[in-house]
Length: 470
Image (cartoon, rainbow, N blue to C red; front, side):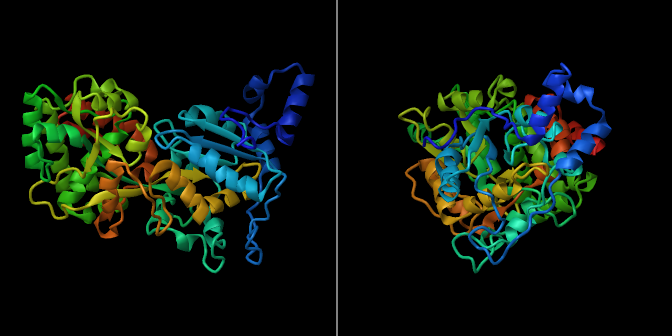
């Protein structure tokens, strides 16, 4: 692994930065004063100077369809969250270096995506490839509006690594391309890589010890939560500082009740029409009643994801919502007598589609418009989607990705319980509102969700506030 650089923030001193540094040093001006010293017009002029044209696709060159110069460094920034980033440093980047031995790979693994990357976007020196995810990500809809991204359609048209007779796009699961589109255009601004399932996690050991039955309906769930509370344990916690984790329990409860049409209305009528849906109102009201019953662990709203998950592992709460990365994220902290279990959010009585589970492509990779090595970035993505790239992901994360037919062996009980839901497409729906409406979701919806879960909003107040802000 000596040919893979450590996970530290290193911005390459390319030609554009070298020119800046030299000219500023001669004037006695520090590099940190660059943005304040330059006018917007000058900055735009510089951006235009280094703007790359569209990548040309050579269909006759299946080995190197983007014409990568193997001597040019590749600058990679990855969200180091629940899946960590060893799948990249010990997998994808090794595969890239095997193909381009001279290429220096500059790797940054961080949870603070926006803090680390935003200044680089502003100075027209972004990484070549960015895995834009996590609670501190940059919002996709804003990046698209600002014209900061490269259309990845050319990647989908390229021959796949393993079979040049089919395109990269043809290797992907249904709905993956759409999950990378923002707005009504056909451009593909992001490539989701993870295929995550969402639901509720619990300790199988705890349930066996107490004789508790895993609930399948909301009525059973509420009755069990009352029993759990009476035992002295909180029924529920969630990752309070990141209310994203409560989005699935609310929306899936609504989608299960009203069927796929509920999600379709969110996709086609994001305005008050979708938020006035009867099933959405019932889901919000159900969670408001849940909070009023005192079923949420005290202090949850101020917990980080790790705080809440640790409290759950230590037996302070019986249930926690999360995606399929949970078991991997906590693999080093799970008590010896704790065997994870998974269940979809229990359905409301009278639900039209009680078996639906959210299975959504996520962890979006993007290629910034002003990337120094966009051809290398596209080839990196093509390698990620190969059989070897997919195997590297599965071996390190025990999770599915967006490539069709992915399979892997695992002895993790939680993932084993979740996987059957993800392998049956007829019971899956996807939720891409965070991609399509990320700014609104972050600035309005998530604070309202936290207020609802603290008991500071009634269901009516929550819905009114959300609709008023649209």
